Image 1 (cartoon, rainbow over the protein chains, first blue to last red):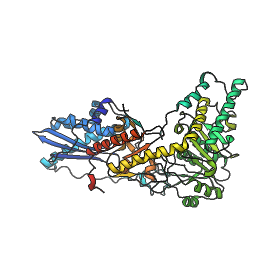
Image 2: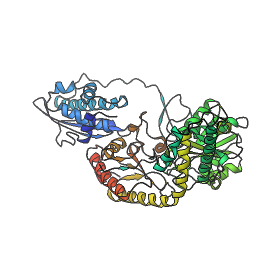
Image 3: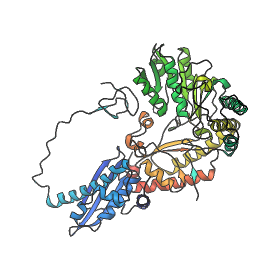
Image 4: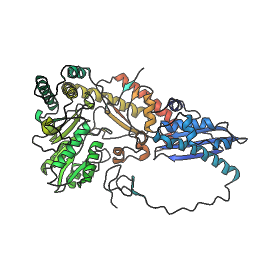
Amino acid sequence: MYTENVMEHFTKPRNAGTIEDADGIGEVGNPVCGDMMTFYIKVENDRLADVKFKTFGCVAAIAVSSKVSEMAIGKTIKEARSITNKIVAEALGGLPKEKMHCSNLGAKGLSQAIKDYEDKKFGKPKSEKAPVRKKKQKRHIQCNHCDTQNPITANFCMSCGEKINT
Amino acid sequence: MKGAYLDHASATPVRKEVIEAMLPYFEQNYGNPSTVNDMGFKIKQVIEKQRAKVAELIGAGAEEIIFTSSGAEANNLAVKGAALARQKKGKHIIVSAIEHNSVLNSARFLERLDFEVTFLPVDEDGLVDPERLSEAIRPETILVSIMHANNEIGTIEPISEIAAVCREKEIIFHTDAVATVGNIPVDVNKLNVDLLSLSGVSLSATKGVGALYFRKNLRLMPLIHGGIQESGRRGGTENVPGIVGLGRASELALEELPGKVSHVRRLRDLLVAGIVKQIEQVKFTGHPEKRLPGHASFCVEAIEGEALIYMLNQEGIYSNTGSACASKALKTSPVLVAIGIRPDLAQGSIVFTIESSNRIEEIEYALEKLCLAVEKLRSISPIWRGKAVA
């Protein structure tokens, strides 16, 4: 299912770990969805001197984190920002379609860490107002039995099969 | 390379004896059993012999067995066939929430034909409560389908108690015994069931063959219309080699069952004891005692099952998981959800299923590699905080 490159990074993840005095930390995903990544960066002279990560997730998620960290080290902030999910996936020789969100998460994790660093260094830009939240239309309904989110049209829970009372 | 195949719930290796029994039915005896020439007639007789062998394994009569293409087809035929044949009596059926997809989706299909379906919840060990079932039964209930044992968590359901409830109210009762036939003693009369599905995949026969037991004279609407094969209950020329294989596998299973149960239980207990001793924060799933003898299932805190499976895979160890990442739909296993496992913990699910061919060394090897893999994955997991987390 996975390319050799993916398996190689999964078996021997580069830069796994944490940085105690990190300049920026980016945390994305959550364990409930199955993937969670935390990136730590150390910046020297506008370059990423060190990048470390910790990942909870599948083979793809671990390989992506490893690849992202490897690609980012030594790059300038600007260069590192240009690492997109597509570039990561390509560098790994491709990912199965249903695993593309993992590469998304990797790129997002790194840019979050960079943003955290910049926010700390320059302060949050004033122009960045809290975005006005649109009133979210209810599109999901929670199952009373197992708390799974189901589409509003569902009559039965897609996880446990219990009838959904609307 | 050293290795251990511990995923027998997914598929079992086909036994040599089974293959040998099947071989004459490819090149030499290839006639169509429905024809009246000598070759066809002989093969028809061979099929009937296999029917008797499969029947003997589950304490049934030969005329009460229908050969199908899989356990899934047997489940489909049982649920849809029995419900459709009885729809004038009522249109309500009950299945448990942890049934195999072939039962769940058959039930959902019936919903589209204006049947009403109750998906019966289970407790945290995965057990169906017969009293709860009794309460769910209505005057128009015509069918109940509860699996004998769950393949993901290993729990064995109280089938004879459930059957007694159904018998009292004159409701047809089906059990999916794909996970149990060949692994524990199964007797349709002791269980008191009307319909029972089994499959070649879990009996060391080939894929593409299964069987459905139906109590004599029970009406079933065929799903595959055709000739009068399988006494008109399933059309299509018989899968002769597959059926011969299933027959031989049934014979072997019957002979070897007593020794097998104690052997696989010993290995399973060894594996479980090792995990308890060496890996902290593991949640075992399914009932601790009422479970399949060769079945160990648990969730490992702070790691994801697919990664764990692949890591073991690289050491030649085969196992399975109910993690969302490992399913194409990226959905957590409904069984784990139904027994109330926390979603993040459910990600770390892993299942080992042991057969008589497994050796003690394989279990020790798997245990050693499992501990290493868990340690490695936890070392890079952002949510692993060691013992501090309760």
